[in-house]
Image (cartoon, rainbow, N blue to C red):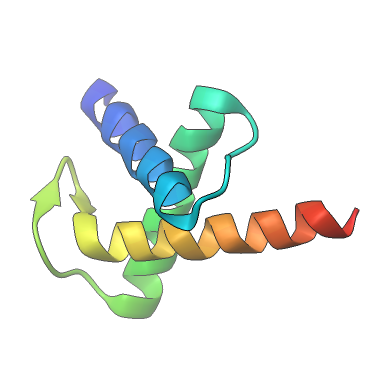
Length: 78
């Protein structure tokens, strides 16, 4: 459980860095972004690549990038 939170946070953090955007909510925002990004990536791109603590890293990062882009788009509109 703790490892999953850490990996989710790292995936969310990396997604924000790769997208060049800051995730609102700090550490908690990174964890949520990592988990939701992992779900998005797994749903649309499948499960492939290395897996750590139940996260397929490549689709999780892609999903995290997409989520960061979507969130930053809607944050700018308001």
